[in-house]
Length: 415
Image 1: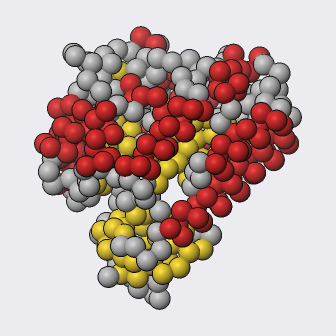
Image 2: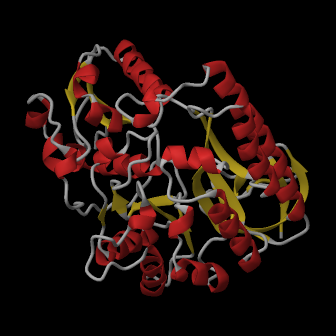
């Protein structure tokens, strides 16, 4: 069966949704789908370049643009050469949008702020991936001053437990051994469901109802919304992976307040300390914005000191990017070169923390999900390569012992 070419930008939720579209559009001839991201101007620039490259390479192809950037500004994307249709974030997940007749009906972008539920989808394959993503939540009710994503995703809404369980069971039957729960603001899962269950309850029930699932992992979480069940799972459940990725954004209280975040540095530091007390080898990642408006050198140094003091090994660093229509875009800006220079310093601190973290894993027994025949990630999300020409099989979980550390992670022998 013919399948569309899909170019995916941005988050894990987009990766999941690209697979939904791949299934819906199967059988369509000569279609390219560009699933955009609006988190930064750079993400949008890359997606525009991808549209232009696709049109040059396949001038007869029908290019469909969707995703957050397309939802927010559909006319801009519709004007690009080769684009035959723009779909909103709700429309892209509707099977009816992907018929031959629908492709000729023009753009379809509804008011995402009117969305009140998530439609169930069943995905059984992620092209080229050994780790599967499952959507448990959509949208966001918060209004961080730098963020445009609520206007691309709409209000927060949860996927019911039964739907998540069905999806995970289907993935496990397809051979996936690790699942990552994803969404826009996953710690808000359950707020719109009867009884307002917390995310940890979903995780606990999922592990109980799908005992054949070997590894469960969370995507980015808000530091102040990690509930009691998540802490218990971290402490007691070996199938719940020892890794937390924090939506931190800054390590300076003044900047956090100007971002309108829900936590302060003491809250984030307490989360890191508690996680390491429960699982000493836990991997910890964080999203951080460098060069937020009004962030002078002294305020930036507070964030840099926070990263160093808490030894955060897995950083995802963004130079601040103005998003039109957001409050931060109207604040006094930091020069772009300074943003990039600060981002580089943060990444360097993260690289050093990663080296130190990997060194502490030396000589220990690790369980690695192979993503290729020679490399994968451990339960702690440490990147691992096999030593001395050893090979495995993508999708297999290998028991290994690290024998060396380098700038790319760990080198290990299969036991």
